[in-house]
Image (cartoon, rainbow, N blue to C red; front, side):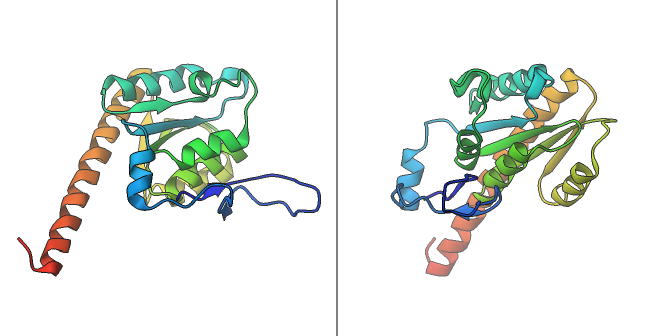
Length: 198
């Protein structure tokens, strides 16, 4: 079963940081097969970014629309899917990121505590991750360090405008799907080889 990231303060309990994976004892552990069948019919793609002040509202919507235009996945983004209005919930967002099949992080200045936790939750649970960075953005030192580290492991796509953003989303999503299918084929071939079957 997916481990959930929590960040809570409860009386008598120490704070659990947003990067600590803690198993939720209220959620039963599922086999891999059960987890696969429990997921929605289409892959879930989590849209992550700074949200305060609506500064990236247009970019978030553009990414979600491009994902869904493929008809091969459903985007999950707070504005439509959380039913929380203007009030953000750390645990809801991080929980959905942790259970996503892919995550697109739009980065234009700094990582918030929530966007970092969303990203780590998705990555640690095996999701395909893509970082979309506004070309020429003035990134904070922390965001630069994050990008330097993560761009070696995940898909990193700079964009200059909304048109480029949409193209980068489709291209990287297609690449992620292709990679996943081919990796699965290789694993199955190796497994058959180990068993001596054809």
